[in-house]
Image (cartoon, rainbow over all chains, first blue to last red):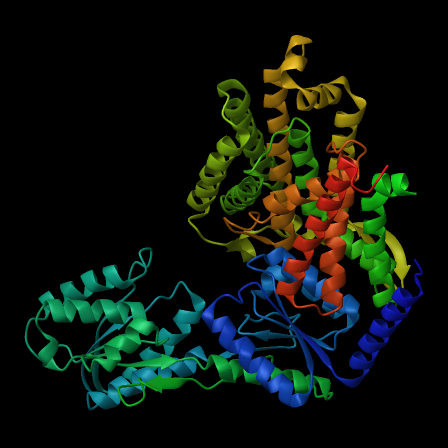
Length: 306
Length: 323
């Protein structure tokens, strides 16, 4: 058997590889979480924008294996990609980020968390999300009334939301924060929030004594809704808001009850903006702001079905 | 020629994979830096596969190695959180591996449960224990001492390669050390020869005076300790621990041992052949990633290559390739 045709075939495929490498920028997207819906939205939007920009994108899913993310970062650094995008906690893949930094390959986080080894992290602005709902509450109750807050300060991304709501409500002289509750989240947060809300309802039995419930995420808002409905007080016009717009919250908002508003992250926007950020880096721009925020959307009965 | 192919077909196939990547990735694959990377990437798998070889020599399996690796990682991390020193926490985690391995050994050799069933059950037990110990959470950040996570980034200085300092990774050194120990135990001691005798024919070994029960029990202890070490290596590499992170090691380790068995003269598990199997799996991941092959296609290819190697070896032994 002659080996010549085989050798020619390999040479041809090598040439093809070179040719494709020379024409387009290559960008690797590496995540252990591709099976999760949110991640799929990011990655699809990233790929869409990258296709417009004419890049070669290699999406690598390690199926939950974080150590393999480090290995694949090392591999694509060796391969010589122009940029890497990760969707994983940067603190866990520090060894890979260091390898990329040593080789001068820029790494962008797609809702990954901040890290000195990332050129930038593209994510949603927790402060801004809290502004949307706390201002919605203040306007909806005409700047006057008693408000119950559900917060969770031990978790930094949620703590920032509480800080903003505190400031907004303090800015209205006629709004009183009746209670600022930190629910027990070990069971998911709905059940304990419901129990705490039932106690508050019992302590404030008169109609109109509670104007609104502002929750730093959706679970306590859903718990409060259950408590209000169970107490038969859904007709008092108590306004409830959450944040994150999870499917249960969207259902509640669509039904037109007390749960009136939540805030949705723009996953596709995060993916597309991550691609735009890579494009800016590849164009030689110095990225000064290491956290890049993508606007979020207030979800109410007006747009919940969209 | 055909006899040569029958004997060394798998080795030739493995070499062909390396040659293929060397040709397809001329600038990056056959570099010292890439091979140092590969050695580090496969280090955890190498440890699990080496100790898996110890039980597979006797014709047994240990399906619990992956969950034991996860358990050891979270045990160490939880002890870090409680203020234990790094050496004390690591010793405790390896102690958990020893106890878990001995427990497997008792189930298989004293009680006499099939290894597949016994270790399938302990897989679930150790995995549940890992969730219990960690409360289902990932332990990371300030809770993990820097001396522990820095270990995976350290190594033996090798001077500069392409103008940048290079190291022989510490994790690779651990993998080499474990492989060397397993090699000495299996190939150079009467203990190891007796394990092979059990694998050949347990009843005959027993009649010949080999203490089969004790040996099988001790072999599983080996595997438990090795799995715990691999779990700690993993935790150090990702500077964190969660209750499932080592789970994937089990099937890949068994695959590596099977790949290695295609290399040996009579199809017995040999630890150096296992190491060759581990290297091939690592090279496939590394090379196919560098060639931008889709990660799911990569998985299909890796599985197909294992099947081809094992089938070729089986056909070769049956003499279908002629004598």
